[in-house]
Image 1 (cartoon, rainbow, N blue to C red):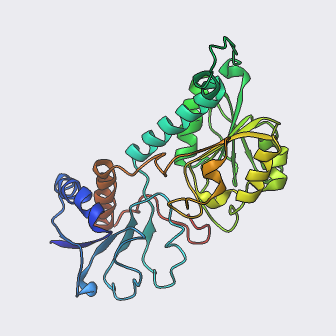
Image 2 (tube, helix red, strand yellow):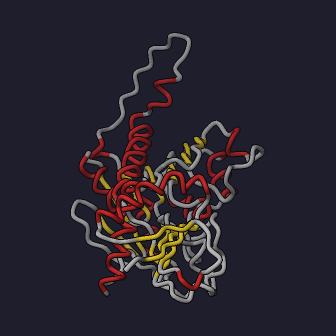
Length: 311
């Protein structure tokens, strides 16, 4: 039986994914016809989806067995009332590895004081020796696949890693906290805080003025998660007051970040253009093929989204 799969993303993504998807389907033993547009939505068996793609109304896809999101985040589609099919988010090895590399690199940058070392001028010999990693606490907010992987990598470097999640987790090598009291305690210890939470009603503006004030003076904020996890005005106020020493931000409420946004000009803000981690077509295609194989075999889908939680 040949399956019909609609690739509902933009042309740029199609150029990236068409060959890896075909290879992954062949390796999984699946006979698939790939479409980038259709006048017959009722014949589609699966949709590979990106929010900037070609589908916003899922109701005509009456035969569709699942919508397979290309990204880890699903906040732009999970509330779509026409989406009644199972929705799977993307969790792939390439994305995880890329995030670990980016987070570890920027934690080490701030831990070692690399910015100050690089920008020394006037031949000033000013040796500043950082503490050892074991004497530095890094807090990870969000202990899903990405947060756990980053926490484990930092713990392997001997950082004292505190992780927080909405529900209690148990991860060897990490101090795991949960709930409101746990969040407050995690932030009180956070010399460096890394945000890797999904964006939901419960996490929007999670890092607000009150919670930033809980962090030790001179703390650092690193956000490769979602822009709206942070109250921008509260962060700028904490930076201007000197309570937060630096913020390294990869994600923003509006992207690209508008040229007039104060983050660009702030001396204690590093802006990176949403590059912390990218879904890799080769590994992501394997996840998509495996989920379609599972759907055809009657097995549970991988990374199925809980609509009530929003991720």
